[in-house]
Image (cartoon, rainbow, N blue to C red; front, side, top):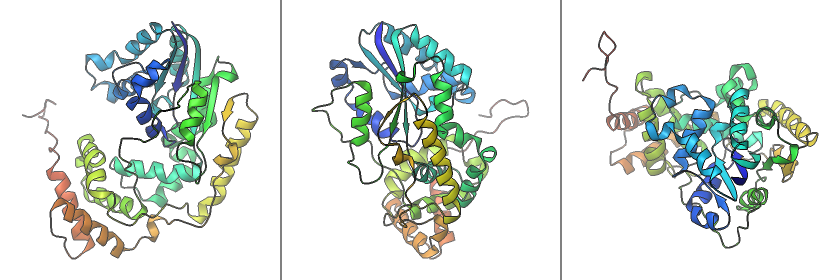
Length: 369
């Protein structure tokens, strides 16, 4: 039976990929120091999250091993005498009853259950979340995305992943406040490895001598690159923006052809949205200050800092987009057309040529061969 099990449930876009990369690349070293990452890899933790929260469409694609992921993590936890870490941001938006059941199941295989939430300021989360959706095939302009998020009823999915007090409320039921940990992502300018050290402190982990260099490429996009991708998505017919298309874009096109095609330019939250972003952030900070949760880091780092830098996609001109598209096409090995619309169309056509078209269904609903 494990001594302690730490369940890191997100939030999304709060340095989770960075942390998970470091944990998994140094899994053997962590095991030697008493911290087990159960399963065969991060895919098992994703599958476990999907099973716990009931991602029906995703679970329907699972094979036998993926369907057993959560139970296998529980079994390994029961058989390990020290500490255990399970991490995936899809745990964050689990229904309350699913969260309670998961905590109860973990409590049956460990002496203590701890929930860890990493939280980042809303001013940086908003553009990062929009960019992530664009990588998955979305074509919604940034301004419309912000308008939907501003109205919680208009973009419930965003808030299920980002409403920190609500996520904590769902996952803390029945746990002492000291076993619910909020790790604040440092404000810009902090040492790059500060989040790693803050999280390691929660885990009670000695990380001396361990690497803080992530091996997975940083595929975050600048304003120009993200807007170019959105326009490419807008050109792709809806029926072709499939899971296979999204996988190709995120895993291949973005890191290999798109990243670095334009000078890096950070995102800004438009002035019209600054007030409500600040108010919402202040409410979160106040709620956390009044809670009994263990907070690691400075809660003021969750207050957005508008320093006047950065731009919005609406401020990007067509010449900049054409320059970026030209670089992308050169990397693909295609001569760039003279107009932006033509260049976007060529990029979209190249992507679709690399994605198998969806198989048609017969009138009886079976897939045509």
